[in-house]
Each structure stands twice: as C-alpha cells, then as structure tokens.
Image (tube, rainbow, N blue to C red; front, side, top):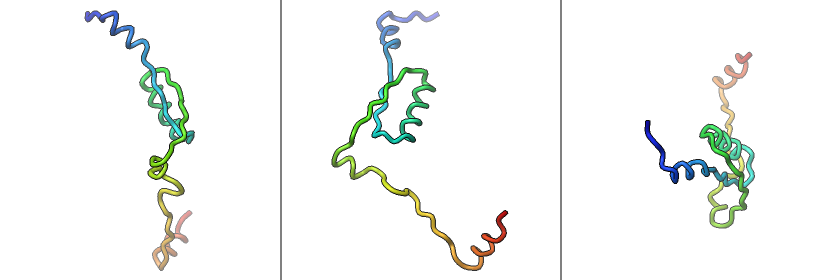
Length: 81
C-alpha cells in the first residue's frame, strides 16, 4: 500500500474551492455542482467586474428567435399538436 507523506496529506485536507461570480444564479449553480462532484468544500465570492471585462460579458438574449414565413411555416404551425 502506498503511504502518504504527512505534508501532502495535510495539504489535501486543506483544499477548498472559491467560486468567483457576479451573482448570476445560473453561473453559481453550475459551479456549485462541479465543486460538489469533486467532493470539496466551496465558498462563493461575488465580485463586481469592471472595465474592460464588462465589455466582454454577454447581455440580453444570446440567440434570436426568428419566425419563418411562407407555406412550409404555415403548414408546420397547423400540424403541431
């Protein structure tokens, strides 16, 4: 059996995860799931991003929903249950 070095064992016991978030629930939930899957304790640290990082953040809808027009679209709309 492999013996662990006492220094390594102590370092492994002190491990924890910091979740850095801007407060969006969806982001935090995903990170919490990863931390729980790893079996490590975690702390949520909320930060307020500043320029230039704010410029790269997504906002609004990420995808646009376009309605198709024409005979095929009308047929699909009427055939749905």
